[in-house]
Image (tube, rainbow, N blue to C red):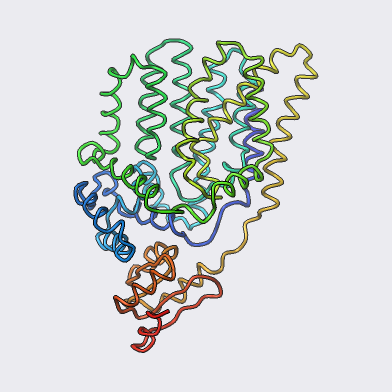
Length: 466
């Protein structure tokens, strides 16, 4: 009964946080591409239609470095409905979920709202996994699950994106790995391998999880390759038969080497300043937990925590290049630190003999976590985004005509208005190049109020010179 009450309270606070955080505006940018990929249905399993790996490499080498030809990469992929392109080269598991929701005919807000299924499931895995890992682990269950579920990054990340599902598989794999290290039972190791394969079929950064598993169980690797490949082959056969997974890593290398700010305009310092400011309570508790771990935790606790801490640190290092203020890009590494902090604080508090003091400290931690997210949600309310719906309304009469639009608007227009022949530009220079090389019936400019200019022969010449 006490666990039902504790878990119910944790979920109730999450519901209180999330009640007004779901966006209602049209699917935008990544979301629109992901929804289109889901609409392709069975193609997500077979990766057909899509470029072969050889053609993908050849095209990237030919056009990826040429600023003038770069827009053609997107245009050609969209023209051929390349399912890998629309998934942004992620694995297909999340898109199976979106395809399963399609018969419900949900609107944008409801579809996004269903994304909260994954953090709730992850919190349940963390809660009961804590009870499973630790004797008298109730305190660890409460703190670690509240750390994760009440986090600003968790609450705010309800976009159509695979990151929350990836967290579910990753957390499951790490907890099973910790249980295997504690007991030596091979069933838990194999369960961790299967969960890691699911993570691999969701986001390409799962290679960090695989590296941690190899480091924690080097003698198990050979036994597990077949199980891992069999799971991937079952869930995403094209990853093995067509080597589709390699496209994601080649694309990541392209972004790192050829694109200065692929995830936004924020720099490294600005990104991390924003992350600390939006969740100061969490980061303070992370620091406190790290100090307490080295000072008070025994070797057995440190050994058990090693996989989750190692994973968090390595994933953080891998994603250092991802500079953006969008909270969901912290999800691949942040839950590992949240789980570790919850476990460490619970292990230290459990040794306090004075029950009132232990209760007061636990309440203070939970209050800090609550206040941290509550104040941030109050400071950053969801505001209307009228531009998106107005863009669609203004562009709708251009069915069957050629439109040049900002790259960020292109996926939304393509998804909602497939009859508009839209091409995208990244900046003013790219717009000028495209206007000089091709003819368009209209040009959509960035910003709000909306500026949509119909093209005549004279204006085409004039705009190409701008």
